[in-house]
Image (cartoon, rainbow, N blue to C red):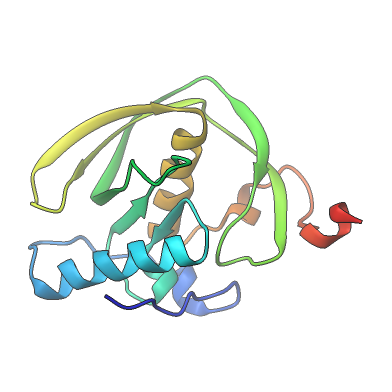
Length: 159
């Protein structure tokens, strides 16, 4: 496993649409392992393949405090959303900033796991926000595109 370089806003790959994954091969297995390592090292809760320069429809996430809910979603498809939540959102590709974003409170997503087996899950709150945020990355969308206001420097609020 190896930590990969996280691409940041302004890198054109972040604005491209990722391609579906058709098979689980060694290259894709290594990518997923590297993505988990990169996400944990950067103290994030989600990371999409385009953020590490790979245009594949894969993202990893783990919103648990104890890193016990790690999951990879391959070729995710949002089936249903419900409700609304408004809150701060940040991104490893937009370092040092955050903004207020309104997203659905609950989301149902269908995807493939690392064994290329289809599954469906419904998540709420932070996990719903994470699924939608990372899924946006697969379509070349960054959270500032959906922000309710301007980007705010993280340091400005700490003073």
